[in-house]
Length: 60
Length: 232
Image (cartoon, rainbow over the protein chains, first blue to last red):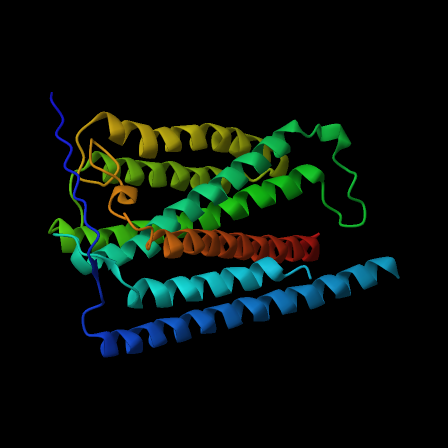
């Protein structure tokens, strides 16, 4: 079967539709992401504390 | 500083969210604004593959350890085998999560460009079969109680799983007609990005999400290890 390859080439760039609304959307997504990262950091620090406690109890 | 890569992952992802949604993108028919999903959909799959490769490597380590040389980690009460197996399963489970995210972002993209959330396309079907293959890995793990046996059987399955998965998602869809870019004779996205604008966002997004995946897998591993040491 003959394959047809369609290649669209353009140098024209487009901006987001409704830029003001998009800034709000980006802000909301960024805040959600930062909250998730804060939770990951919280777990990371808690695990570090627990690991230190375990190591101390083993060395004693 | 040991945590530089975690900070880097957060910075790169925040940059890719802002630049990906607010920056300029090529003006293309059909794709239009949905082309921005490239900065989210593809990095999810790359992250999944990176995590599955890490899982595969730990599965090999797990098998290469001799059972009699296992009791070396006296201070942690863990055998090397069980730690490698734990690493392998943590990478696989986080990889699956990113795979599901890749499927969901792809489905949203498909709805807006092809008109349906799911079409009978070889790339999509192969991705779904690949996910089922890895789901079977977790079913297999949960069906074996003996720790040593579970580590060995699941490592063997994992080593078979990755090459089959890569064939399913990279090779088979290229051999037949497909709607998906980069498959079945369709040009991939690098042919659309003539002035390299998208690459400046796409590559940082891939690195950021991969690093975040490794961070989550590392946290999962450490958490499971503490749980295991508490139960011993």
